[in-house]
Length: 161
Image (cartoon, rainbow, N blue to C red; front, top):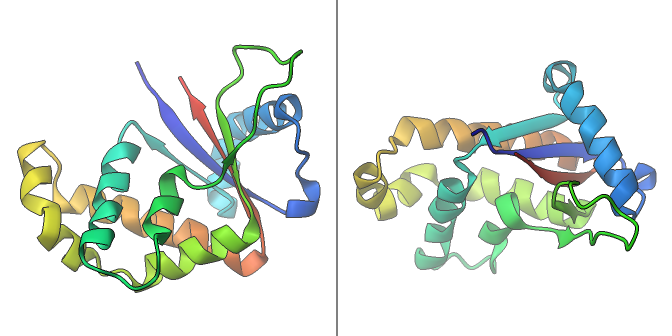
């Protein structure tokens, strides 16, 4: 079974704080994801997002002085609750507002992948992850969040099963 974490950059003024609306918006974005990838406004990960979050958690152990921005790239944002009349099959949704998106972009450009990998790489290798796989995810997140932050966008996240 395929499970994807889908990220979509969007102007904050276009976002409605309504789960049903956001679920429909994200479903349409998912259907159009090839064109949206090409436009640089979406990105997704199949199953590996928890490992990427664990990699970024190593930033805390490295005593970075930037607070806890490592928590934002994958799980950051506020949950958008289902309304009473929402379809229960709609995906879980999170919304990361523009200041958080900018914080993620700064974190991803300043954190050293090599230092993170040196801190936790042995554990990841034992789980079957390679540095190249995680470096690819890191690079994709850097690009996506960098573009979103430059545009002043929010990021909506959905989990598709």
